[in-house]
Length: 522
Ligand SMILES: *[C@@H]1O[C@H](CO)[C@@H](O)[C@H](O)[C@H]1NC(C)=O
Ligand SMILES: *[C@@H]1O[C@H](CO)[C@@H](O)[C@H](O)[C@H]1NC(C)=O
Ligand SMILES: *[C@@H]1O[C@H](CO)[C@@H](O)[C@H](O)[C@H]1NC(C)=O
Image (cartoon, rainbow, N blue to C red; front, top):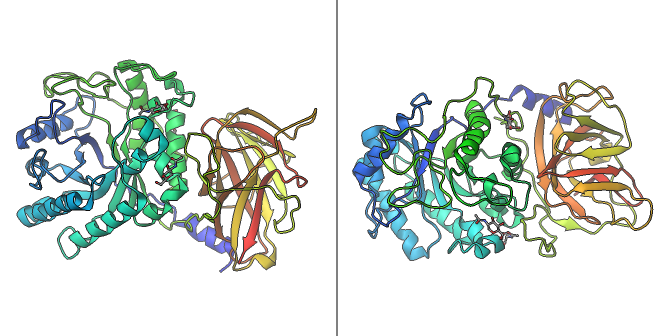
């Protein structure tokens, strides 16, 4: 099969897939004072969600964190009966940051629910999440934040497999089994084995908490979608559901992020509304998180009190101008799974932030590395119809991306093409081949047709993600990802985009290697 034919085939197959536009909230098993929620409490909440002023009554999904009724050993959580009574669809959760004897209780409750309620229950289930932020809690940031006990990738893989066998042969067989974690967990290559086990990735992302970045409400939409994009790039082609996001109405300022109902409204109008338009499964955080106490920060749409009577703290209507997210392309024919070599340890990275992708030393010669790009074209997304033409300097920033074409030789046929971005060495002297105004990461996508001198943001066409790297470190080669080179002998275009606030320009060179290169292995 020729590469170009494969690309045309997937272009024709572009459709929205595996996202049904479920809209819901996250529901804990107990109130803040530790009282377990009963069937009446859950029903009250599920009904309140459907009656939210400013919505169409279509917030009819609920995400749970556990199958177990709070305070019991393995009694089925009463939310199941409440969901049946109110026709609320369910993203089930099994709490996984526990030893296997305790996880057995989650499995027992899941099986008991199937046996007790049958299809009245199982028809409502849209997915099952094994775990919630377990991988985040074992990271240095999670530990520093005293986030509690987590679970290792191996433990999660075991629990995911146990869950799959528990539903085998039942009316719940075939329900998508996934996991929920922070976006930073998915872009950490050490967790790739977990992703391989999943039918979907549930992503939690809160720009408010991203205190190492410029995280004011003005940047929140961009920050959120940066997280979403890197998660999609790491997802091995699987659907990414947004399982938690939101902006607090009250609480402390976090770096530049101010908690207020006005800012929660802005986040809703920009981010929530664009997710809804794009039909991405969304479990917002949250309907009301101040019951029997007020947490700080507080994310509730409804203040403490009567869920049915009290007006939302902000306007929930979506602006007519809200556009669907155009940053990622759901593919019914998923692109080849991005792979990384996984052999270079990332432990050498001293930054406390999560890193994506192995790093390599920069070679002194390019013997094994295939050519520099044939054509390099920066494009400015704030001037969507203006071609900037062929240049030697690549530019990446919140408004600039850079397109490059490679000519794959015939010898690439049947091999695996690995993409490496070589960062320039730290400048020492009057001349430097780069300008780094603001640190960050980058992502690389394959274009469905190569760039030309007249390519602009508006005529660039669709792209498929290959991978992402974060953070970019000077003097290092970063492995972005790999894909089959296919036939060889063709010209292929790639788009390099900035992530997480990167503002960087570089002089594409060979000696030393600076910029994007591709190498064929095997
Ligand atoms: C990456 O993931 C591994 C395994 O889950 C974890 O031990 C490690 O702390 C994570 N690294 C960072 C920087 O978060
Ligand atoms: C976790 O700790 C980091 C580093 O101290 C901080 O920037 C971040 O805001 C904390 N996150 C949460 C959720 O508290
Ligand atoms: C938020 O970002 C998404 C993805 O880039 C975009 O589609 C949407 O229009 C943005 N919303 C606003 C109000 O800028």
